[in-house]
Image (tube, rainbow, N blue to C red):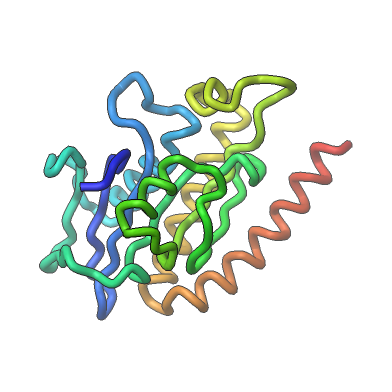
Length: 194
């Protein structure tokens, strides 16, 4: 379906369904890498809802909720989860739209949406590469124990905000969630500076 699309999840608990898309690289070689946190967000959310991610379709793995899934949705109902090096590790941001931020997977999604960028995204902070490290090599590394702990906590926060999104809508969940994450970001910067 979409280039670099690995997993998708049709959520039909809301009056209008959402399509949740997690970006990453398929295969065990990439499991647990920074670049695959979009996949991990899908898995953690699906698990929280009791949905097994086992069906393979169109080179993607997806799970389907208890109601019928819709394939034709307006772009503002397609939420893309992806890694973001511009956010500290474990900090999340929920946005109604935006650019690609040099993320090749998001560029690919935009290309397949005919250049349209009016789809929401959940950015998952993975931090920046240390020193002069090649960003591509950094993306394909696994997290150390400290960073993995931050990511695990962030994914649980992501599950919580997705539940709010489904019940209260994007605008309210983004307002509430981004305020909380802003303070988390400031706390992390203060901790790292000392």
